[in-house]
Image: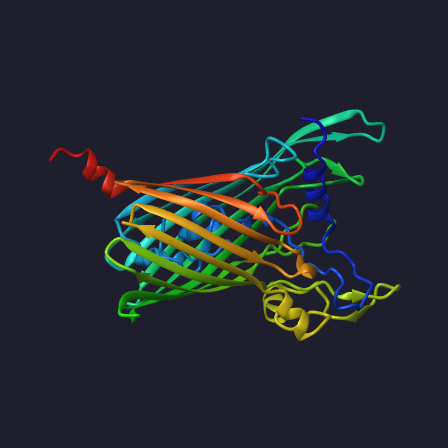
Length: 388
């Protein structure tokens, strides 16, 4: 296709880094900026239908993205899942995100897992100052994960995942007279998950709590002459409650809180001196600790940086699910606000899920787009295919 402004804009934002603010108005737009934002997108339809909540929901094959430690509680000996999400489909036809995830149980306490997240940004056409085509490049980004989860008790598990991140937005094309290069980073997730049985309104219930320090890793640069930028290091906290209404009906409510662990852009004066906030050019460990108190607007602005995901899931006979959710982000920090809905069908050996997003404010890249995920329980499929 012809020149794709969206992909070029992503490239220039990634190379140039953070913007410089000049106003101390606490209500001014001051969104946190990172490279490789595809790492923050919900890759699976189940969580995508529940307002992007998944830190403390019941374990599934797509747990790697939300909380790797959940794999230790998953039923089954192994499984694999695939998910597909069209991106900016209302504007361009060839931007999408695909996700492949799987796990294998070592023993009753240990599970290994892996995943591949691939984002295609379509064809980018580079032209000279006269508008003549010079190069066509298919921009792409991906991450490869390897994870390990372990039960430490009947109620608590821990997990970690190691991640390789690759982002090629320009294909080495010269920008401003300087050569660009693919961005590369190494990161890790550290997570925990706790669940306990309970009784609620004389019904059997299960309460769960989850935490995940995601994408803790090195900064990324797209040029030797540019300052490296932070990847989306994120703290996710969540809780969920599931109640068995009867032998056939089950209801889950969940909420996730999320916060970037990267610097908040400070306020600069006309001489580009910082007058509020902290210097964003710091190391990764310093950035993580400072992220809780570096906002130029103080505690009030720090609280605005928290995102909220609310989700609900209803299962009938453990075969049919209906889901809904809501995601909220403060208007000065990105203003993403949207409702989600979806459904799931579980048959012997595999599950298929769908999700749909309805933006409340600004248009969303996934607005009015149907996404789907398909997962397979390898052990169940073997039992189905084996003779009785």
